[in-house]
Length: 426
Image (cartoon, rainbow, N blue to C red):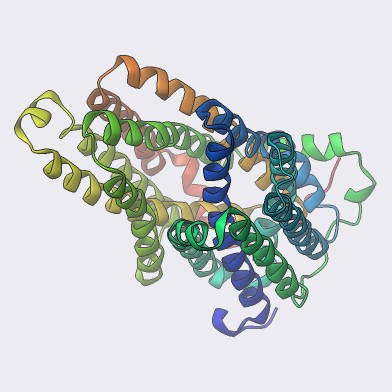
């Protein structure tokens, strides 16, 4: 690996730009998919089922995808899955254009795309440390985070424009082409082979257990993993279910203001991803703990204008502006917390285990999301949103604060200075 600026790193730039293009296509695809299903069926339940189909396969297959990412040529896995998803979406676009589609076909294609993503995502996360030097890894993750949030904004806006001008089929064709272009760019990436001489002879079950054992043997990593899952559980339901409920049922704002509110968090995340590059971080763990604590505190602040006093003394627009400002700040702090977390795991997990551990991370995180959404949906029907945000914020603050003061996490900071050694199966 050459000692060069990240912007002169051909392999990173190719992976970054390919992912940028395909994520814009995916953002357009997601809007077009929901819109088309609503037009086709007029059923919110059916739409919900289709969205579940887009996440559940990734949850169930995530660990297996991570194992594959540690066993096979990662370049082949990345390029092949981009081409596969591109082909599936193009076929789906043609079916819609020719009037030969059905809910079954949409569901089947959605499941295949989700399965493909379960192999693609761990491979990309695992390959990042192979493409950039350790001192550039946090910057690379920062750029990736900027790309993910920026493409959310572009994809949402472009999706509406494309559907209005080219129709649903045109939006699907655009996404299919974006996957193909991403795959073509990735053909020119040089990815080093995985250091796993003995591992390929072992069973997948042994590999899976070894990935879990690696986490359980590293108590500090496991603790960080559990905290990460808990905070995702709290934030996932509050933002996916709680905020739409507040905007629609309590504030009763129009669709345009709701759309604007949805874009504020990724805007903040982009700002946070940029800002973190200009902060001299001496202690990654302390910085992470303080950032997560500050982020969690904002949940408490979000609950205050939604209280009985706030709703009776503030105008709807004042509450909307307060929530908008807090969402931007949350986006900034979320990015500044997520980037160090990802960097810590990438630096401390050996190359031959990285795929399966990231597969486990993705599986548990995505697996808890539907549970969080369902639970918060029930709670918001029976408990004041103000109480839910304040109580969740207090719990999140207590958990985040533990990172700063528990001695178990101190070893992570020093361990990150040394490269993770290959782990052998016993």
